[in-house]
Figure 1 (tube, one colour):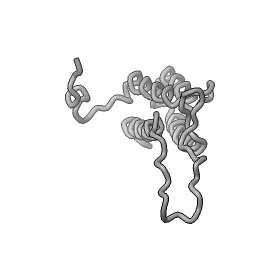
Figure 2 (figure 1 turned 30 degrees about the horizontal axis):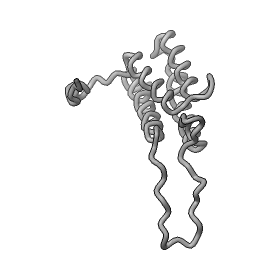
Figure 3 (figure 1 turned 135 degrees about the vertical axis):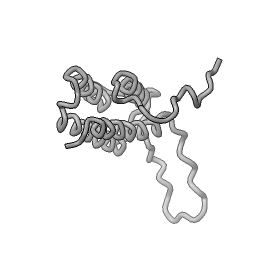
Length: 142
């Protein structure tokens, strides 16, 4: 079987993939105007990469499907190696993934980013062990 570190690395990588997906949908700019030349069919003006409900962005159906695939991958990691996670962390991770998927009620893209942030702050195995600490590469803003 895989080592604890390999399992944790797989989980972290999947969460990174989720974060990448969600970050790209957080307040994106409007799509560019269609080019007036070179197109023989009318521009698709109804396609938007996200849905806006009351000013809050939510994932499109395609993006939500991709998110659910990543969440399924995270759940598989947890289910295949439950002995690698303390019971309280296993329970909390399952709850976080359910919130992220919108299983506890609708969530905006901003809320999903906050859930990811909470997960990376809360669970020790989610913290990077290698590389330069973030506060060393980003200047403090006064």
